[in-house]
Length: 204
Image 1: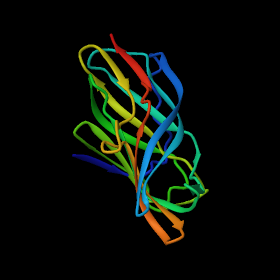
Image 2: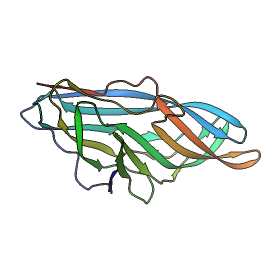
Image 3: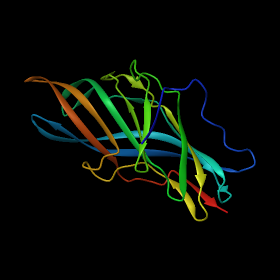
Image 4: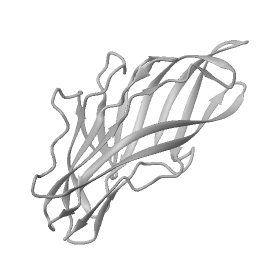
């Protein structure tokens, strides 16, 4: 397992100038399920991200894949109840096939609480964590994630997000919701549905 801490003061790493970059904006929809004392509640969360990577890389060459989330807002209500805050976040991103991970940088981000985001890697999955809390209705911005990679011998390096079900979630957090029985904590699990390819780099 590998880990790093802190939101860095620098901007996201610049891609090699000799390589034409592929860039795209994606509107990601997360399918979520909250576990509450009142039963399971289903909801969707939307997140726009800008993703960039070089169009090509030489075998064994280095490259950077940058995923830059746009500002977003915590819902102020869910299922008719007031959302007081959300906390204890994890966001997962798989290391692309045909590449090895050299390092991860977390840059920028705002409104995420006093503890800077941190990252770790285990089993080919990078996990970004931060404690929050973020108040219901508040605006926040997730950090830009820059993955520094070394290309394999052939094929393509395709980046996407992690998660395929509530049990194999790519985004988790706990929501504190005000209800008629008092404040309740609702652990929430989400996965991107659909899960598009964010960037594609040909090894050539």
